[in-house]
Each structure stands twice: as C-alpha cells, then as structure tokens.
Amino acid sequence: MLQKPESEFILARLKNDLAPHLYYHSVNHTLDVYERAADLAKIEGIPDNEAALLLTAALYHDSGYLYQSAGHEEISCEIAQQTLPEFGYSQNDIEKICEIITATRLPQTPADKLGEIISDADLDYLGRDDFFELGDKLYLEMCAGGNILTRSEWNDQQIAFLKAHTYFTKTAQQLRNQKKQENLNQLLSKTVL
Image (tube, rainbow, N blue to C red; front, side, top):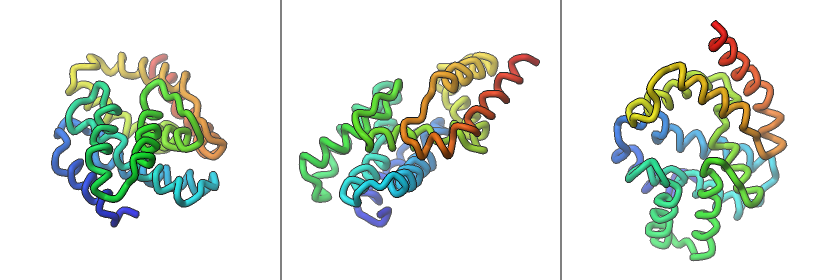
C-alpha cells in the first residue's frame, strides 16, 4: 500500500516540509497511525475497499500540520481534496476519507467503525510501552509551540487525558486498556512524589 503514488506523495511532503519542532507529529507518527490502522482493520474484519480509504485517511490525517496545528484536520481534508483526484479517487471516496480524518479531532467523535479505528490508531501509544518516550516528544513539541510551561503542567494534562480517554474498538480495548492503566498509574505516582 505504501508504494502507491498518493502514499509516496504525502509521505515525501511530510518528511521534507514539516516544521522541525514537530517532534511528535512527524512522518513517524503518520506511519505509526497507518500501521496501527492496518492492524486494527484486519482484526476488525474491515473489507479491503473500506480499508484502502481508511489507510489513505491515516496517511493524510495530520498533513494539515504542514501549515498549522490548530484546526489541522480541516487543512488535512483540503490537502486530500486537492491532491487525491490526481490519483484517481472519486469525490465520494474523498468525502469518506475526510470524514475519517475528522474523527481524529479532539475530543474524538467517530461516526462509524472506520472513524473508530483511526481514532484508536491515532492514540494507540497511550496503551503502549513507548508511551513515555512519545509523550516526551509531544511535550517538547508543545513547549516549542508555547502551549506548556512546566513538566508538572504536562503531567497533569496527561493524567486528565488518560482518565477521560476511551478506546472505541474491542480490539484496541483488549490490546491497550491494561497498559494504558499502568501508564496512568505511573504518572499518578510521579505527581505524589
């Protein structure tokens, strides 16, 4: 799938044109979301034609960061609308891709199973062993953007986010809920010290 021209196009744009202070929202995050979405789609039994739209949405979901962070989902949809017709996508396919992309907007409100999958893939790291490593990248990115002042504020935001977060698919719940709780407990223990 990644050898398709639309995939190569957007990955090259992200690799070459994203701002250097986007430590978390990098091409690596996009590839991670793509891989997690592919895994979840397979386990959840998504038909190939729908999975193809899901995976295109995964590749384009943060492309709006090429221009801005606030409201980047809408910009990501604009990029998809501008570029995907060149790769043979129909208007209906592009509308569906944009619907999937907008499911990642926080707070996440997916409209269907594909939106649930991309939402879970986008925040998959919350329930993984690399949570703190990726969280540090997000912290540095937010510091660079002037959105966070202290590590304590960051930990408080992480705790609130983890407490409020719910995975949508049964697969993500089974695979990630236990580790997500462990990560939350570790954060809570840091704030007590």
